[in-house]
Image (tube, rainbow, N blue to C red; front, side, top):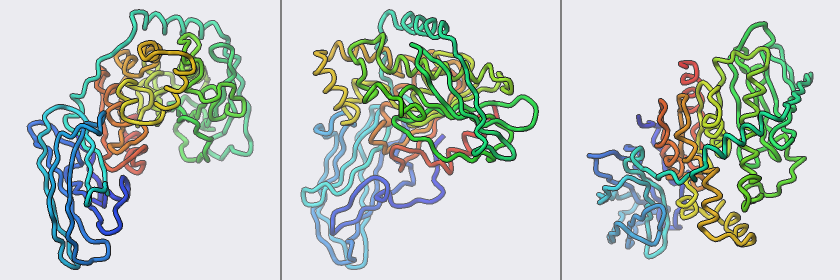
Length: 415
């Protein structure tokens, strides 16, 4: 089901910079993605920024998202814009392969605008590349985690507590004996409550929380090792680089185990309805949400959005970060590409996705420059449990929270 915007506004505000003399307005009536037998047709208007008459030589071209140097479509047009007016241009694209594509608008040889489109997004398949011992690797990690006593500590935070819910600082031990922390918001009234775990984004900072915003839900804001509430105790440096050459002690082995340990905690908490434990997270938090569901069946449903850490080989062709620091670290460690991608395959969300059993609702930003839609779909399309996809056509590395949050609440209430 397509995400329909309440109002169609200039895509330029979200995803591009215009040249000094021309302004671009891309038609969003089709949300910039198509399914067969539809033919992708891109429409946009051009106007002079000062409302003058304008003659320009325009080139519109399209490339695969993994290779900006390979045009699959290119057309030049000389345009004449009347004073105080605009012109509309339409391009029908010869796209038949599922995937995501980059569109560029040039004015006299200078790119003035760029944006992404999609074709058959739910048919984009990036085959898993998991190692033969993949499941054994993660079962061993879970066994190692289970051998660590959680030593849970829950301390009331009087300052942040409200009338409807109390706030608590939480500490526990995780894989390797690491201390990890979170913030717990619990209804004051007696009874059992559903619980929603929030997993943190890469380098995210604690945010202000509306303690009395919900009195029917336990909310648990978490931070994996070295991040969020644990950042003052970070010993890992730039997390994605840490022990890149050693899968058994790579940063994300511990981080994924932290995600499971948070489920351990909330499952034993006295006010939790253990049949209704949910999880949500964006970016790295989306990856942690998917990883947690793949490694632990106690989650009843999950809502990841713009998820990180998926489809590394293609991911690193599309974006500079995190490719640059990972490649730099690989060079420092003397890792060739085959070894690098073999190591990362244990932590690739697309390889974990098939293990997920609970319902999933995923949100993606079609213009995401950090966790591109290509990488989001590489995991989503391998999930075999009931699932929903929400594509936000103008969003970059975010979702439209005014739409996403009500959808999330309804999705979880239905479960």
